[in-house]
Length: 308
Image (cartoon, rainbow, N blue to C red; front, side):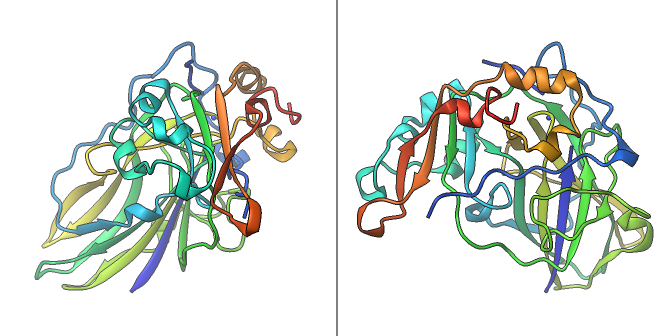
């Protein structure tokens, strides 16, 4: 099987062992974001796209939907009200289990970025060519501020081909990006777009593993992923969603010095006004227990952090 990595970079919204910090790409200077601080949210969708066919069978690894480096989430008040167990602290054996898989349906956001592992299979008798991959039905969402949940994890998935998008661009374009070399680091589009030079081919019965990584420094987003396909001489569009809902992620509200340089003054001002109501982080407990969730100061992961 061939592994393919897709990445997107770009920060807004409104609304009311230890884990790694959330990742986020730096917007490339040659494709500057067109968006600035929005007056309201959510904004109307852009890059609208409907599905015309679904010749590829998509299997998402729902247990590996992460921010690219860990299981870190942002809850709105509405989502947290439906999953109050996420507020519990202590060891895993003392906490009430809650399901991120169920919480997606109720508005859960990844925090820092979004990475999705999905396998596409060609079940038909005709070869299928993936001619392009696009971010579509993009909505700038309200920032979910009820809870920042940093559980983290260890390890990273494998990918041999990677793409990078600037999700803030009017038309996000896929560029090559070495995610394994610098996971969660600066994403700098360069040269020709990936699909100007390559096509991903799937023979009958063949599978392709895609790792889809999407990040923004600027705003929280929801979006779908569109694949432009050629099958049996026809051009089709197939959408990839998170079950019945779009993919969602919120930005890291405490950017690094390098990330701040990619942000407009209006974006930084917007960040300073955003504070999580509560924050939890996975920590080490007695006897080496690494499943403990502990409270932390929400300001340390919000706009008023030291970085700002």
